[in-house]
Image 1: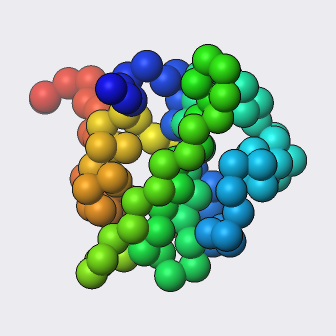
Image 2: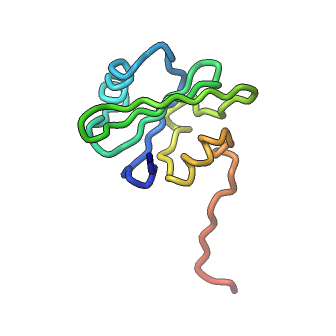
Length: 115
């Protein structure tokens, strides 16, 4: 069974990706455009133009895996630019896979004193 906790980092590719791309094309995008090593224990996320399709790419010991999820009625909220994109936590990925908007969540607050 797949456990997201087994992966070190989760990266999102901002903007829209041509969902006709398969493993090889997405690996090249992650290496050349995102400047990341696809053989590390990381997850790479890609979203289509209609924002209904999500692809999840990762290396698994001796080969690449590609998962795809298609929302039937809703759309993913997806960053358009690198500035809007963020590195996701494992909890974020679980929410995103449920189709929830992780960018609308409350920001974490930090205080040093109550007085």
